[in-house]
Image 1 (cartoon, rainbow, N blue to C red):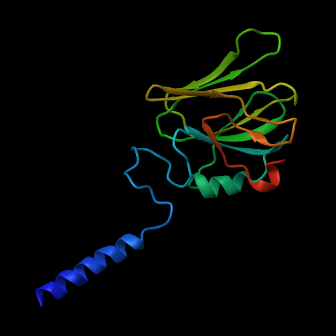
Image 2 (tube, helix red, strand yellow):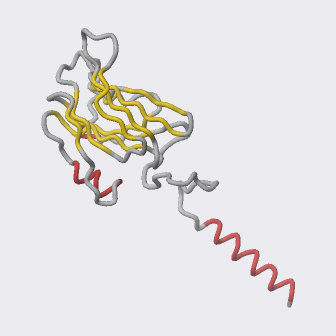
Length: 171
């Protein structure tokens, strides 16, 4: 009887392991990681293009990724809207405006522990004017979101995940 009980218990453990949700992380995630977003290793933020002159489908992103909390909007220039979602709670943010005729971007906003936000930027399609810097535990990502003039694709930098809905992603 004991071997039968042992086999039954092992079978239950194997079945429980097979029932784990697909895409589940194999190791515990760092404290404060936003779980609903499918980040890959090395990505420090997610971004989504929301539209030009008016944000479109912001409610979709608020409900899907932000637990119903509407993010603040930072207006740099009258242009494109992007949602930026820092991967880790407690990431430091600096938001600057780049000017064509200035050597250094103008710092507009800092937050030592930022939350998701929307930025309106890029009044010109030939010059990205937002400079976003996110820092977490010594790692820094600096990027300027923009639409590619080549194919209309959304460019969010090499450390970011593009969450743009396919109908707005261009290309």
